[in-house]
Length: 118
Image (cartoon, rainbow, N blue to C red; front, side, top):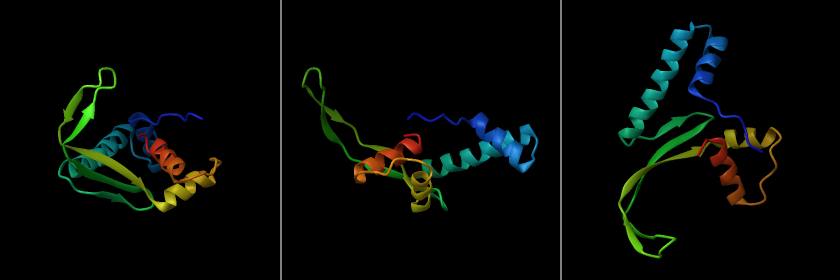
């Protein structure tokens, strides 16, 4: 079951409808929050949002990958990756709202990754 994609415009509209700021102020507010989250992650900080989850930056080391077409080994350079870890409360809410219960841990992680937009 594919869900609808929520965009920045949708978030701005929700703030406009629920908070009562003007559309311009709502847009500026959403952009400010997203910029602050982005800036923290760029600095390598963890962003924890209570009852929602945590955004973490992890360092991945260099490793050897393989081109699936040719089988040639290729070095994959070290890099930082962003990971989202949903809170237990968010997992509960997702599973309580009509989602099919996970058969195993891997299915639960896939459902959480899908919900987070990964």
